Amino acid sequence: MLYYKDILNKNKKWAADKLSENPAYFDEMAKGQHPPLLWLGCADSRVPASEVIGAEPGEVFTHRNIANMAIHTDINMLSVLEYAVNALKVRHIIVCGHYGCGGVKAAMGNDTVGFVGKWIRHIKDIYRMYRDELDAIADENKRWDRLVELNVKEQVTDLAKTSIVQSAWKDGQFLHLHGWVYDIKTGIANDLEVSMEDSSNLDELYQIHL
Ligand code: CO
Image (tube, rainbow, N blue to C red; front, side):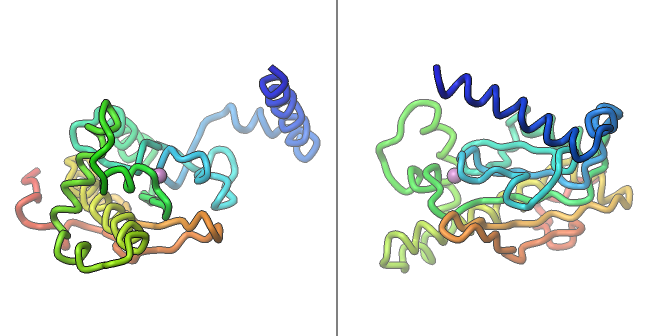
């Protein structure tokens, strides 16, 4: 119970600190949001979206799930994406994975059942796509790191496969997709340089005639 009371008190202190810096802070916040960024990150508690990029409230529209996945049948993710792109007109979407991702690790093994087991099966599919490259990495931790990176790359592509993103591009909307990997050991996020700014690099198979 102590912890629970403590976090409520921390919230009050946080709000008071914001008001002491700017008495109109919450009045301005209540007027609406115009975030330039959608963050698709891992649910891992060590990778808090706004905090690691020094962003303020109102700056990052956020969706987080296990292993930062963009599953094309996930109406939760798709609803966030649709609202972010069509209503908020975010300019950038960052898929941010992280080294040490337990979801990715679980996908490399055979012991995870239940809902998590079903969820990470999508990552197993990615392993299979890159099996030659991954199996050639003898060190298990290095193989894990590489699968984290490849998963991010594939999730960026999976966002590009959606009609939401392709429609925005067709309409000439500025929308850049990026893939990052955050390193929990250093606090640094690296750009994997898998950015997509239009559908020109998207496999023809996935290009929708809109
Ligand atoms: Co993770």
